[in-house]
Amino acid sequence: MNAQRYLYPQTDRFVLQHLHILAFTHRNLDVNKIGLIHIEKDLQSEMLHKVKDSHGISELFFLSTCNRVEFTFVKNQKIDDIFIKSLLQTTFPNLSNEILNDLTEKVESYSGYDAVEHALAVASSIDSMIVGEREIITQVRLAYEHCRDLKLTGDLIRVLMKQVIQTAKKVYTETSIATKPVSVVSLAYHQLKKLNIPLDARILVVGAGMTNTTMSRFLKKHGFTNFAVFNRSFEKAKQFATEIKGEAFSLSELKYYDKGFDIIITCTGADFHIISPELYESILKGDKRNKIIIDLAIPQDLDPVILEKHEITYISVDLLQKISNQNVKERSKQIQHVEKILAASMFEFENLIKERNVELAMKTVPQSIKEIKKIAFSEVFKSDLDSLDEHSKEILEKIIGYMEKKYISGPMKLAKEIILKNV
Image 1 (cartoon, helix red, strand yellow):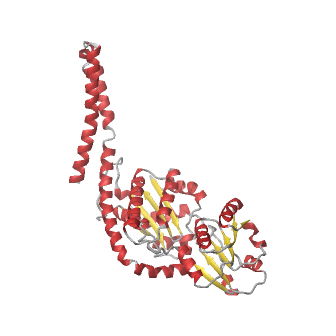
Image 2 (cartoon, helix red, strand yellow):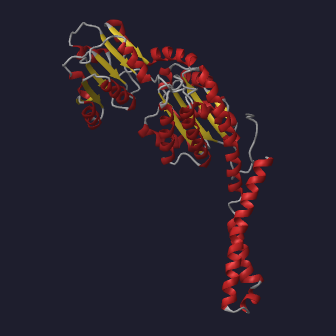
Image 3 (spheres, one colour):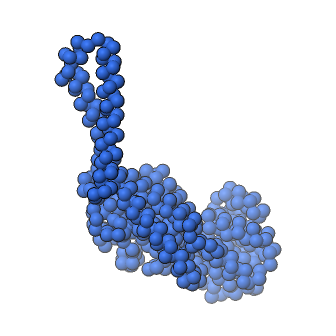
């Protein structure tokens, strides 16, 4: 698609070149660095509204997964390095200038049709660290609904996301790109399975977020039985522990845990190492045997110093990323099929935007017609109408009302047909 095409320059209509995406992904950045620009859900309203207001952004959508952070926004301005760095400084004021420069240098920036193509590719998983990972469509949908509920988004992003979700569903239905899924969770499980761990192994689950709950449910489904769940919110820990038939604890109790463990599965949203050397020593209780730690957090929850001092089989997101690179080759044949679906979706979206622009351009037509009718009745033909009897007035009102409706719907339909054929 030609990214230089413009759709209607009027400010009250969609101008697709005003649509931009800034993507910080696993392709150019270490996943731990991406973790530095994650925003906790309960902080997004304040932080994102601040960014939106201070940078003249009319619509904003924020997406954060384990290997990408993206800002999708609508702004009537060319996006350059100065703007990108300013946006990052406003959003993350505690980041060092060195990190800000690195993020600004390595960001992937898309505008117009390029942005639409990128959004479709992301939700369809062909832009993912793990091609065919179905959970991305859910992550995109939930992130959009959250931003919509925070009143950050608007009409253009709404139309875009509707097309993105519909297209992704079609991809997963009509291709086999998601067969034999290789999500972060399934990759971690397959690594664990290779170690021949007994099903009664003692498993500490640190964090009760989506990734850990998915991982623990997966383990439960495959026969593991011994879980202890630790979470900042005890109620959430208790709720999930009940589901997997484990014990529940507040995260603050972890340092006092004395029942031993074989495996730690950790994934929190903390911006520091939750499992410090001191904490690890405390829960180890002098046990010198090899332990398994599955660290799915970004940035990582385990302090790297621990790996230097103890016998540990460490399964991290970085390791899983290397494994996933092989999956891209295996699924390359399906990517061609997916790309055909995305190309067709781009064509549909182009027509959708044109139709929507017609609707926006003609939104004042109904009111204009009503005003013409009002003037005709109250001024131009007032004396003629006054001479009519009530029955004649009633019939005339019905005729004018019928013509009014047809006059509104007819030109709207005709305008759409002309636009789709000629623009």
